[in-house]
Image 1 (cartoon, protein in one colour):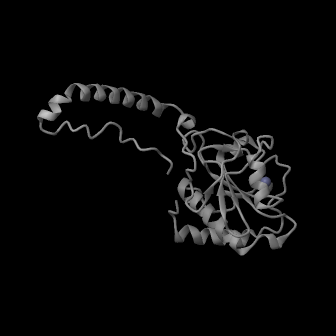
Image 2 (spheres, rainbow, N blue to C red):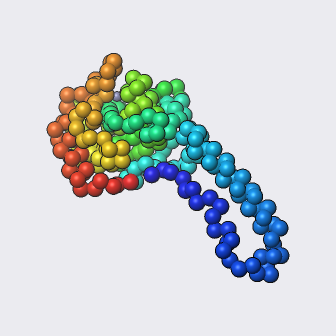
Image 3 (cartoon, rainbow, N blue to C red):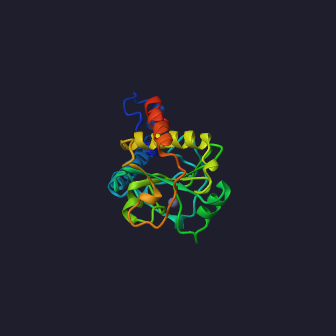
Length: 228
Ligand SMILES: [Zn+2]
């Protein structure tokens, strides 16, 4: 999803009979036709330009279960995934703070990091960066380029923070991402931040229940392959 419509200047009525009205407005219609053709030419050139130039609609989502809150543009960069970079990883993070504090720092240009999504302990999902864009979250350039990052509200040393609602909601989101990019639902492709090469981060930590999570992702994958 997220593609714009390319209907272009169709429906120009060329098959209609020539009525008196059409003759009266003929000159104008021809001018409009030429302008529309020019616009179409521009559109064709545009297709060859990387998606960094694609218009972004405020509030547009990649996952229907999320609500949109924009991250600061300093915390991600424009891209055209999966055309310029293939997406083959989902990276699980833990915020080390509240849902609200995670939203706040992702809106802060000085933070220089953000994930695409944040999942709350109550199961709510915020999307803050479009999946076609590269979010700075993995501490590894190529892993940023190839992954979608999901933060989870809580602290790595508090197992009670990882609620059933959070696991279930995050699993649905991950299943949707995997379905859309044909990412295998396994631990090679759904990884923790700690597993990113070169990182010094330890999240999601030892209390994140991978067996439970992967079971939920697999169940969500077979139940609803198309959720967005
Ligand atoms: Zn992390």
